[in-house]
Every structure is written in C-alpha cells, then in structure tokens.
Amino acid sequence: MKKLIVSCLTVAAFLNANAQNYWKKNAGKTAKVILTSSKTNEKMADKGTVKFEKFGQPKETDACIFVDPDFKYQKLIGIGGAITDASAETFYKMPKNKQKEILDAYFGKNGLGYTVVRTNMNSCDFSSDSYTYVEDNDTALKSFNVAHDEKYKIPMIKEAQKAIGKDFTFYFSPWSPPAWMKSNNSLFKGGRLENKYYQTWADYYIKFIKEYEKRGINIWGLTIQNEPMATQTWESCIYSAEEEGEFLKNNLGPALWKNGYKDKKVMIWDHNRDLIYQRATTTLSDPETSKYAHGIGYHWYETWNNKTQLFDNLAETQRAFPDKFLAFTEGCKEQFNMSRIYDVSLGELYGRNMLNDFNKGTALWTDWNVLLDETGGPNHVGNFCFAPIIADTKTGEVHYTYEYYYVGHVSKFIKPNAQRIGSSSNRAALTSTTFMNENGQLVTVIMNDSENDIETNLWIEGMSARLSAPAHSIQTVIL
Image (cartoon, rainbow, N blue to C red; front, side):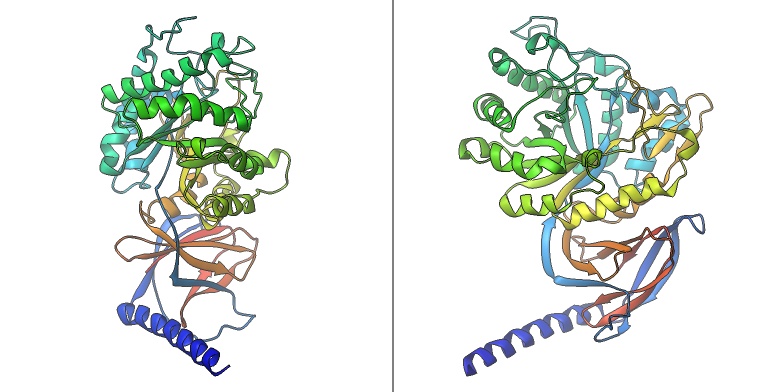
C-alpha cells in the first residue's frame, strides 16, 4: 500500500510539473480570437485578445472547453476540396479577376489555407457530360489520353498546385470504369467490374498517374472507388468489401509497386460512416491486402438512413487500425437553392462534421466541389448541390456561403502536420477541437449551434480565458 501511495504521489507530481511547465513557457500570453456570427453578421472578424488567469477547479455551472497539451493524437495531413469538372468549368467561365479572387480565397496566403485537392478520374455526376479516357474494348489501353481534362480541370489543378507549393496534396477517385468493362455495360446505375478486366482497370490507374505527372501534377494518392455500395443514376460501380480487397491485393497494389508508385497513398472504402468499420475489418483482414492500403476514406451521407452522423464508427475504426489514417473524402449539402446560399445552417453542417471528425481521429479532410455555378452545377444528371463558393457565371458575382467561413475557421489556422491534443466540452451546444501547430501555437475552434448565447471558459491546466459564444457562431482561439 505504501508503495502504491508513493507511486500515485509521483504521478501526481509529474502531471502537476507538466502543467506548470506549460505555463512557464506561456506565462502572460494572450490568445487571439476570430469570430463568425450570423447574429452580428461578422465573418472571420478579429475580436482582439483574451487573457488567461488562474481559475482552479471549475464548477458544474461553469461552461468550459477543457484543453490538455499533454495528450497528443493524430497529425493533420491537410484540409481542402475537390476540383471537379464542374468546379473547373465554372472557374474558367468567370472573368480573369474573379478567377484570381477564387484561387486566392482558397489557396492564397490570405485565403483558407487549403492544401488538399481531390479530382475525378473519368466523369462523375459533376461533369457536363460522360466520358472515359479510352476507346471501347481497348484492353491494351493504347488509346488512353486525358485530352478531355486539358481544357478546364488540369489547368485549374495546376493553378492550385502553384499557389499551394510544397504542401500540395492531390488525390483522385474513379466513379466508374468504362462501360465495356462492367457487368451492366453502362457507366451508370452500379454494375460491377468484370473479373476479366481487373488487371486492365488497374493499369488504367497507372496510365492516369503517368499522364497527370507528365503534365507536372504531383499525385499523392487515390481512392479505389467512389461510393462502392451506391447504385446511382450517375457514374457508379459496386464492390463488396471482399471484391475491393481482392482487386487491391492482386491487381492495383502490385501494379502501383511495380511502376514505382509504392509511395502513393491508397485509400479504401470512400463511402459513408455507417459501414466503415465493417468494410475496414473485412478488406484489411488479409495482411497481403492491408500492406497496400494507407488510409480509409469516408463520406458524411449516412443521414439518408440515420437522423445523425455516426461519428463513433470512426473512433472504433481508428482503434482497430491505428496504422491507417482516416480521410474524409467528400461531403456537401444537396438540393441547391440560390435563395439559401446565406443560410448559416450550411456552415453549421460543415462545422459539426469537421470538429467531430477530427475528434474521432480523422487526419485528412476534403470538401466536395470547391466551386459551383448559380444552378449548383454543372451536373449532367441534375444532382445540383451547394458549395462554399458559388459563382454566378451570368453576372460575374462571387458568393461566399457560411460553408466557406466555417471551414476556414479550421483550415486557415490549423496547418499540415499540426497535432490534435486533448480537449473536451462540458456543454452539448458547444462543439470544439484543439490542435497544436508545429511552431507550438495552440488553436482551438469552438462552435455554438444553439439558439442561445453562451459565456464559456477556455480552461488549460488551471488557467482560463473568458469567451463569449453567440448563438449560431464559430470562433477560433489562437494561443
């Protein structure tokens, strides 16, 4: 018993010393506050600084965000969005000065700090038409070319790469193999990749990588198949977990390694959180498959069958596969309506997902289209959606939705390689996450999606700063 008491005292002293050490390094520091509030119509407004003072043990009546720098979790790969055919086509329909404005808004030094870009290999719903890169029945892929992408998509991606620089993190996803490779002989409505074309399809990825890199675009990674359980009216293809694993193990993985692309980050699943645990445990159960996979991608559309997002499935998956990173690869608000582009609930949808995703272990976060036009397109099947920036190609106006600002409260201040640290909220209305940048800067993002203003405390190891969280607001606190 005596030894146990001594051990407990030693641990307590160690933890207390860590707390004191943090404030020895940061004594007298103030934190900067940036606020977006629909109530006051402020957007990423500089609210000055708050001071940390001794606070001690909070009471249950004290609203608090607790932060502990001693507990460290995943490192951030990056945050960004997709440059689809629709985004790029809309971009080049805008005047030159507006193109520059949009690029700067995302990728410039005063923009949102985006470093991640996703694109589609072959057409997707957010294309003006359907296309592939080969002629029908060309199993040798001799006709492969990406000329289609050279009009809009490749130039915009290269502009983004130039603006981002060394942190550029670019990956691609296919929506469907060419129709002649599939069981239903169609790009649309699901269907499956025929077994006899598994290797041809794997070689198709290699061709795509080579053609894009030949044009100066550095490819970081890929997902195997966008939404492999969705039979959509647009481009889609079905894989069971076993089929996806077999394709990766026997065809795609070996093809990547054989061609010197062992460093390309392969992400499995790329669908919703509802089945992420089952897919990961099934696909990655074979070590010979798992060795080719680096990450597990997911979307947020599980609400089609659930009232809320299933964030806990992410944490369970991360615990099961700590050597694989979690990657949010797509999310948007459907059913576009131009009259709703300034609705704060659009931003709160993003804030709720981002903050909870990071708290459950996500290392990479990618929005869907970075830019859409005044119809929520172009989209060749009428699946019109919202985007953070809406560009009116008729008037030349650029509209920044609350999606843009809510994402920016995270992406602008939390940099690649930042590490998430321990934090929690004692109020259901306050959602938060905290990261430490490589320079030691502590960044906490706090969202209040309730109807009530809340006075809260940012509490760090016995010191606290008083904060005001207006109803329907998000703020970033930088220490």
